[in-house]
Length: 339
Image (tube, rainbow, N blue to C red; front, side, top):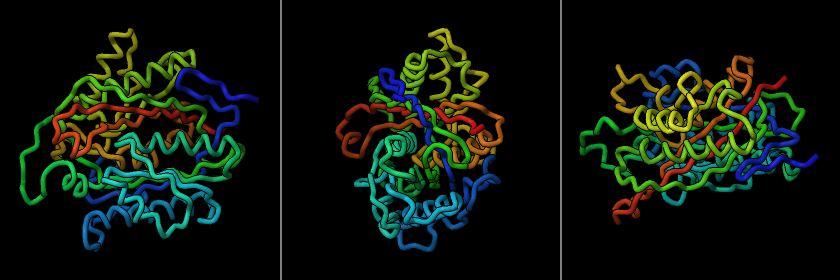
């Protein structure tokens, strides 16, 4: 049976299965609203390593091994690894996964990386090139601040539109149709880079919201449905600012997401008690929220069908310092309950 295709969407005839998932987070994340649902909490964000980058790498290795174990598999059972992070040349991923000895596709989709990794992994499995793959993404507050913003010791003030980079790593094992698991991936929509001319790196929600809007609209158009087909449409890390922009854009199209939208960046921290301003961000934000809070509800049948839309701001220190704009991107993954 052929796969159903839209302009940017593939609906799988034999939906791959998410066989296992793992989430590891830092101290601040463990103290947030989703804290009880994460698999492991690291109360020392440095993990006893020489630097923050090594700490992030160690989270990747630990999350990968835990997800494989929870899927009832061994490292040798994983044919390919799709993974990424926010750092230059993907150093958290390359150093973090080298000991796994799994063939690696290193990915950079900024904070949308988990959606990209799952989409590519599901295609690989569905095409018959692998029985099992691993999709993973991580971020770390201190490594992101060092690379993109200011040294931690500087103590700079953060505008209310800014978000707090999540220290965490989420990993899922994707296998062939018919296996036991948490949920199934029935379709994905590849996102386009959307550039509205945003230049404020302290307001990435505004840069990413149009990309989320475009991907959601493309998904609904390609699948011939509307927003009510989903129990939840879940964006990655728009935060409060980006979320309101997305809701406004959808409202102008005659779609109301207010009753079914959720943003991982809004959910992961408590604005009142944790001083994170607009919410959370980073590759790890949507990845850990997916593994800890979203997949369990799909597995239990509380949500039958979810559109998971991790969002990313495609900037670098070079592009930002050269005064360039910040394109956004979002990838949509349709995840459904296993009957």
